[in-house]
Image (cartoon, rainbow, N blue to C red):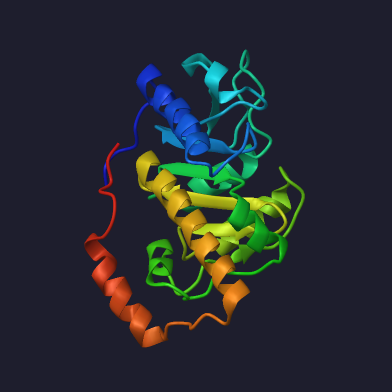
Length: 221
């Protein structure tokens, strides 16, 4: 495993670029989403309420990974910073967390409907389904607990009546997963309107998981 990136203007700019790309991809609206990355023994996260197109590297908020007091003189972090921090603490291999409100992910999350093995791409998220984390107030400790529980053996999950979260060994990987998750959610939601989707068996999914060892975007920092 590569050592975590250290805080730098370049790393901060990649976070801003990812936010802009997230909106350009149509998987987020306005400033409703947020992104964090691991930077040494700190977490960098987008600030609360700052339009992505106006955000500068110095605006990103630095939070100690051990949960100690935030350094002074910074903007207010995203209200979702507690679950970003909880994920990075619980999953040492994760270097980036992307949270967004994609329309189809939100639609399934409103129904509290997990995505089953309706398509082989479900395997891209670590198992035979994409679970739904139980509902809790945004920014709450309970929400952090619910999300980390759902991500215990997964790289992404839906969030009941809220949105979605995707993780990655790198920021490009996390953003890729969020895009794939929304495409999967759209396909599944559409299939439900025209019939009953056929669910792949555990044996079929095991074959996919084995084949996925070298699939998709190569991890890079």
